[in-house]
Picture 1: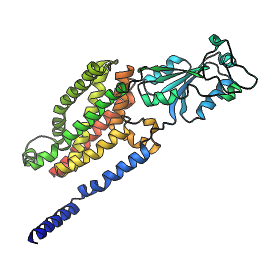
Picture 2 (picture 1 turned 135 degrees about the horizontal axis):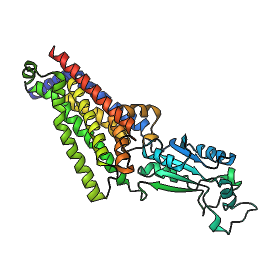
Picture 3 (picture 1 turned 135 degrees about the vertical axis):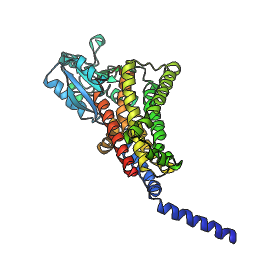
Picture 4 (picture 1 turned 90 degrees about the horizontal axis):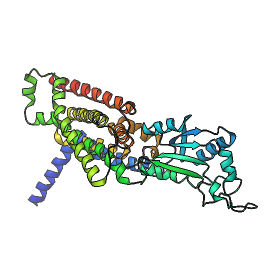
Amino acid sequence: MNGLRRILAIIAKELTQLRRDRMTFGMVVMIPLIQLLLFGFAINTNIRHIPVAVVDQSNSGLSRVLMQTIAATQVVEFTERYATPQEAEAAIVDATVRAALIIPADLSERVARHPAVGLGSPPSTDQETSRPVAQWVVDGSDTMIAAAIKGLRAMPLQELFRQPANRNVPTFEVALYFNPEQRTVVNIVPGLVGIILTMTMIMFTSAAIVRERERGNMEMLINTPVRPMELMLGKIIPYVFIGFVQVSIILGLGYWVFQVPVVGGLGHLAAITGLFIAASLSLGLVISTLASNQLQAMQMTVFVLMPSILLSGFMFPYEGMPELAQHIAEVLPATHFMRAVRGVVLRDASLADMSDDAFWLLGFTVLGLVLASLRFKKRLD
């Protein structure tokens, strides 16, 4: 009985301590709640409204009917219009769109020659003159996006053919750029760079200030002439080099083991990676100034890490998420880096092509350092 009373006393003590630790109690409630909402609403493999471009070289009523018929499937959404296929390909490289529909000038002739099977229309024997009515140029680096658009390859167009089309001749030709073999690892390896950096960089710095306090070094830092911003920079710069070592390991092994080439310039890759490392480290410092101990810092790191994995486009296509989830994803540094690093590594994009994501990461870094410095200064007071 005495042992049972002692156990109950310890249980009461732990519950009281948990009630007083509002941060931990909040994480106990929020982590399962957020994960449930993410998996229930934000994660969707049934991709819809993929942003695509159109190059209408026919510029006829028939081409407009073709676009309307494709848009009615809700698989794609025409968001851009270009004059030449080269402009459309450049838009795919800088991630403005994920694919482009090239409508040829001889669309009417192709539709007329397209073999059909229906009432009063025997199959065409002139197969060599039968060609797809248009062509899709697709960013094949994302296998889910590519698979969704490939599903339109044999799309029936009764509005154009007046009868079911012959399935032996596809309605559309599909050209997969950057990953024609549709290897999933090509998309995974660059994305893994962002996930591992997010995990390690935030984890390293989230406990930086807390660790100084727990070890009793805070008084020494207060008495030194080190300014808050100088302390923040001194905390993150060593980890920048560690981040580059991790990137080299991932991409090096990806090349030698999985044959994932780095087709973009190493200078552009280093620049965008450096911006992301700095943004992740500054976020970790902000967490470190908010947490009162290393356990809380670890809990807050997990709270940031899970949405970064699920919403950044690493596991599930960004286009498949609801609009609200996309807005949340745009706040996360991992989302911007995921787009940029895949653009550089797989599509030979330059830093200028990824300028929007690069500037966002730079702004996030500056804001994070300023917030961390201000919070540390308040603690000095």
